[in-house]
Image 1 (cartoon, helix red, strand yellow):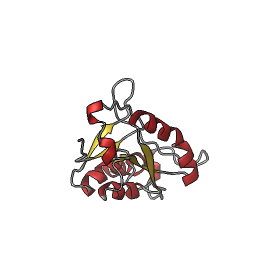
Image 2 (cartoon, rainbow, N blue to C red; image 1 turned 120 degrees about the vertical axis):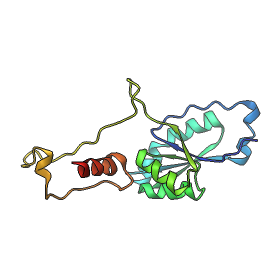
Image 3 (cartoon, helix red, strand yellow; image 1 turned 45 degrees about the vertical axis):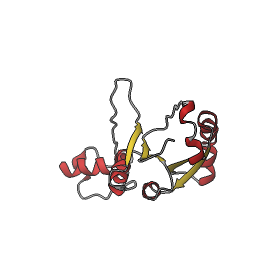
Length: 165
């Protein structure tokens, strides 16, 4: 019997799973694939978007998809820490927060990779075209709109970079 001792964090949505016949009895213990995702859209739009993923999970794993939607990263992190889900879709900062929340009880399964093999990404700051901000130095004394504090690209990396400068 296959038992899960750690929860799984997925960065990016890629899942290709082959289930050997000897391990197929795990489906009795886990009749649903409980998957958490931080959704920035309406619940009905997210459910519609994940419909084909649910069909894929049913076809490949032989279990139903139980989608856990949260409006903030912290909701998915709390769900995985509480054992309400086994898998979550999360970026680097959210993964780090889940690692702390679960005392190391999560591990990455999949991360997006560029064609050159790198796994990093860029964070970008936008200003209005008619703004007088043309360089980072021009932002001094200005206010910023931030993404969720558990967002790597929208909060953590830009904040650290700005503090370093």
